[in-house]
Image (cartoon, rainbow, N blue to C red; front, side, top):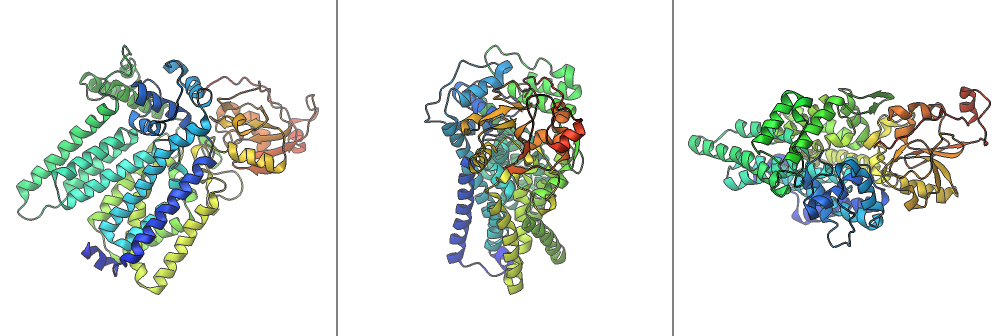
Length: 584
């Protein structure tokens, strides 16, 4: 610790350090707590919360097998103590209708949703504490406070750190496993090896993408240089770590599934693995035969492989694709981060290059971040910035370590203060509109560069309701893409063709009056509805209500008599009617 402080500058007075760290953690907690009630239910939460409750209370793992059970059970732990009502046991066929009934009919969503989000808020504060502790041990108190400040006001951390999903949980456990590996590399011990194995087990029992951390941990352990004369003990320590990584993660996974192989007594075991997936299917079938993991966990892997092969509708800079683009996450990184954070990354890279100071700490931070970004960029599932969320804590510590020496000079402190304003200022300004929809100045004007969970995850019904009250709009035509219920916010509406769980009127596609449309629908994320909203894209919106685009259209009861392009300019048109099947 003394060496780190001497390298980074004079030690920070303890009388300043503790209050500053506490203030930053409090700022993070306050922002997350306020966002819990400001955002409506997102598309993933409606599946995760009920599934997690069934996992935790009934050991029923049939619902939502696409992701492991542990993270969803953590969400359900927030519901303990509530008088939760549960309908008859669901089947996979009616999973979403049953989940909808669980959240909105059997229980009070106004109580249920905040309680399910509370564990994630606490874990996000825990992630910030880990960032601070690791940066302090590696680079000193000044670097630790810089890293903590970046975390406390990072839009992605604030956006996903209060939602009842598994993204932030996985990022935390991956970070803890990496920190444990760093500590083990400095001083190998069986206890530290166990921490690495348990934390990595929690990560892969929370989210399947966490498996990509395994080669990083193994490579960093193999690259460690033992002290002279410690050959035999170094080999024993390495064997202990590898045994921990081989034994403890499967144990954590089995424990999270109640040590049951099947999702429910009498359930079928992966009936279509081999025919659908070729060699990966053979491997999964062999893993199931060897009882390496529960069948439901392997089904999640099978689903993700198949999903990746089939692709998923994605949007980037006005274009659509099912298989994505190599530069998708590069664009996401450029437009979803604050100016202060982007400049800090660039300044940190320049400072590190000039100092020529590259340590093992740098590799422990850079290797996971690079791998997370590379794997996400090469994959076909490009659904949002949250897929690269685990790399941000590593980047924050890497950048803070390089920038900490600037605090030794007056000019450096001025630069750090400017970066703090450019980082915290936009994050604070984004609170009103929602952190999930944050874009920096590079994305201002025109069509949004990204959709889906980057912007419109169904979370903005509360802001639409507030806009209607403020502007005295009694009723709207609503094209909503999401899982929440507009009625619970008092939104009087007629449904337009969309994809939601709460259709109340049979949509005929005619647009008139006050029309409110989700960006996902307006800009064509769903192929079957692109033509429906195409004419609206030809004109600017008359207003914005959160992420929603608002149009004030005219029109009577009959079909317009003017041509479609003229109707678009006039503000009223009738798109071709089309069936909207229930298909989430």
